[in-house]
Length: 199
Image 1: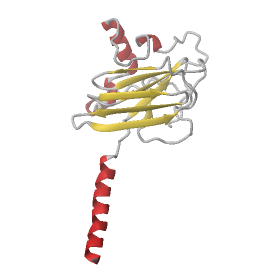
Image 2: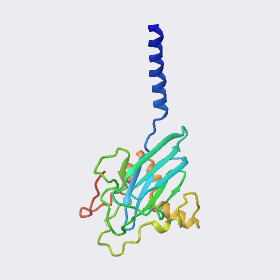
Image 3: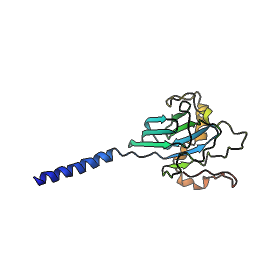
């Protein structure tokens, strides 16, 4: 009798563990930068499928299957400030998923992406696109105009020129590290330029 009880307990542990493993989800690596009217986030997931992004007033959730192994990725972020869900959009490419979060309060700088000042291992600042736009009267209204109008991430750009312009601004291939060309990492950050928090 006791043998049967022990075996039942072992089954619970084994199958319970397997179920837990199957439900594990890995956050996608991402980088972000701030602009006057929008915040930009690039999720570095190649060959993504089933991309789902839920924009909320002060939070957004990203999920997809990525890579040849179709790993499940999910990221949930409580944002530093509110966003306009209706004007926030995303665009999938073969190398990444690019998101434009339209600020609820344009012109207000975000020193970090998250509400809480916490270190997220999967998130980093996109220093290639970061700039201190405060006090810059010539700062364009972000890269928002490089995205197509509306909020459907499946729509195509109107022209190839717009696509190329958006990819140049957002990075795209920068998600993939180039270890053979370390010297090409030109850090054009000046000493007097405001640096964001690393959170």
